[in-house]
Length: 68
Image 1 (spheres, helix red, strand yellow):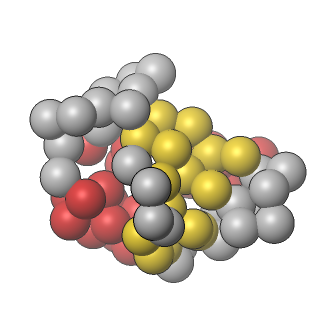
Image 2 (spheres, helix red, strand yellow):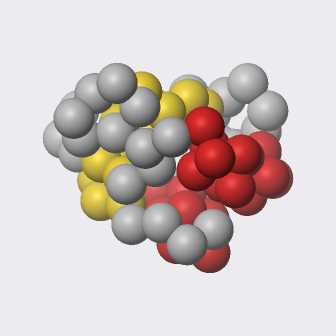
């Protein structure tokens, strides 16, 4: 799964990490902060897009689904 976010620095990553680790699992996601779209990749197939979106929103960030 790929998402466009506004997670754009190491401080943002630190804030969202506990939320995404709980939802997707540690090591099952990453954010490319060098990409202009700040793309979040989630590798865990058992988690739903809705759960990932809610998790990122709960951490205080925006997120939208990118086409595969």
